Length: 476
Image (cartoon, rainbow, N blue to C red; front, side):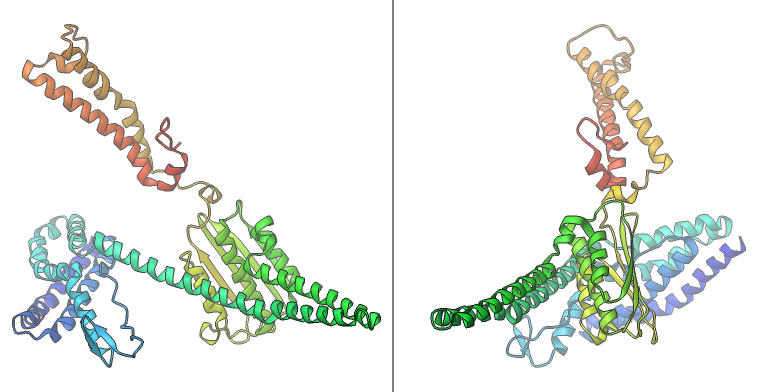
């Protein structure tokens, strides 16, 4: 109880900060739009957003209601044109300062959360004052009600959630495209510098053989032997390039055996531990394979490591990969393109990379790819809460009653003038009420059926799409 009163005291004390800030920010907003001092708008919004963010933390700590940040993603920095100029609408600028300011202005003005924060700052003090009696008599209910009020104005809107998802998908798409382009350049370089040069050499050797085959057969045979050796080396080079695109062992035997093959080919002593009940999808396997290959190569080449371990496991639908080596440590993504390339690969699957590499070692790299494993490999998805299960059972067990005997069947009896009323309750009502009640009963039954299907469908959409059917519109 004392703790709740302490939380209430914090909220009321915060009101003493809100009131003067309300006057200051209101004056800045008035000057921005009434007198054209638009340079005051951005700092005014920043002040209000800091107050709103502080209130979100207070509500989270005091009521347990987690209010996420609702703001639309900030605009990207201006990009120069081929001539080095920066465009803002129809005007060109030599520096990005004005275009960046314009973009920020439009971002702040067009964000609905900006104006909801302004409304919250205006209404929040009187709301808290009005809740004081409830705070005193029922502090837990008062805090809960205030948390719901804060969530009403400060929580993310559908537009901000959608905009955040679009921005994330755009960023992921760009990273994936960059990673693919880098891979294509690497493959082109390998073919040009290795395989193509060897094939040209073989062609020149065969041309020399044609000139020597009649005059110097022994020299021609020697050149043919060199050409045969060169063709074998070219084939080996081509196989290496193919493995760099998509290793055959990965396609044929899966991720576990492909990682074990990497371990056998490594100059280090590598132990591999894979605990996956089912194979991930092919793009996920390829991303993990090349990431582990890059990490083992870096450990041997740059870290002077002698031993390494690879651990791959599933945690529900998430795939977790940990690579540890006893090298020199000091790995830094900013010092080379290897780790940055791995991050680009993982970003295509919303994956993250965590690096722990103190000087002197050891180096531990942990990669987490969320929601990439099939549902059945996660050991089954989390079942519905008991109250949802009971609700679905009750709905399926009772929905037939209003739908058929009290709805459709009663309507048939009424339409054909059948005098038998049996236990069809609408037929016992006065004449003007019978048809409205029949229609209402039918609609209530249909609504109960819809809810019985919708509850499990919204609880686990992936499983529902996988298991439900027309004849069984639920998940067992």
